[in-house]
Image (cartoon, rainbow, N blue to C red; front, side, top):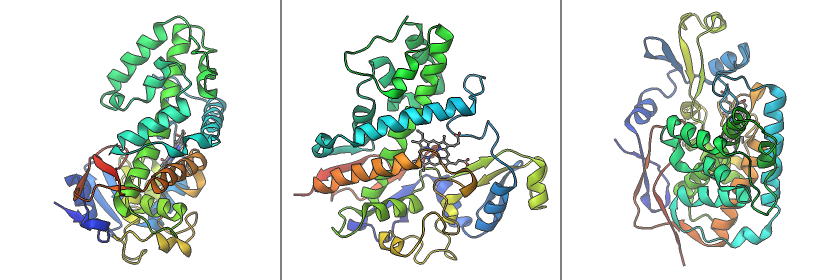
Length: 350
Ligand code: HEM
């Protein structure tokens, strides 16, 4: 089933995996609906707000810092990791020499590897491999690579200063500590590459080539609306939900769907159209039903680094006259935890 991205230049068509396509066709604006015997889906923005307000996410619902191999990640530990990775991103952004990189090729692979190189390039191979796209295939493969890396006695320096995130790891002394530290590195470094590459690939797919007067920021907000990288928010069954809405049973998990609120015709004019200019007059931090970075109470801790990185990639793409290969008419959005178009052929338009 094909769903056209209405105004995509060149008549490009985004092909959603059937389950996502069915959600978009059947459940926009339907409020609350049953997905299976113990999961309800929610597409009503007010109900989502009430549900996310009624209790904080528990430790298993935290996307980045849920327990690692059974070990809880404490708040101070998560904050320290986030501070380290933010510094690494800032350092990468401060280097103007990287503005002329050649990013033609297949996206999101090309920008993923570019981000890995500019942000984590100074780290030893056994850390950099933690952000390899192939590790997405199975958690088992990830843990095999982590176990192999942790078994080596110390983190050998490559001669260059390692990243702040890498430096945290060099303090790990025992095998168990190194394994935990490498798992944390993976949790913090991989999303920088995966999410930003997915976001900017979506932007080029939906809108390139862009008019010169369209701000990158608007392109990013509009891409996150139509292709929200974080397309669902899952909360496990708990009594508070039944109190908020009696249709939610005590054993029901709740899947809240920004994917649907972001295209709700009650909330958006021309909901399926890519119109970055709509953000001239909308506030992304306070628009009903727009929650690409989660609820105001518990917004993504990474958003302040993600947006400038995405802007940087867009800058490189726009300066380099990059666009989607005019012969490519469709791209597929698979069913993954992170939503994004795949296999986009990006070329120099000159
Ligand atoms: C386009 C990029 C990203 C998007 C769209 C995004 C989206 C989100 C969303 C929707 C939430 C709330 C989840 C919920 O309430 O269940 C969240 C939380 C969070 N995000 Fe992000 N995120 C992005 C990138 C990142 C990156 C790169 C990092 C870290 C390096 C990060 C770290 C976090 C953390 C720490 C939380 C708080 C909950 C936790 O402990 O896991 N995010 N993000």
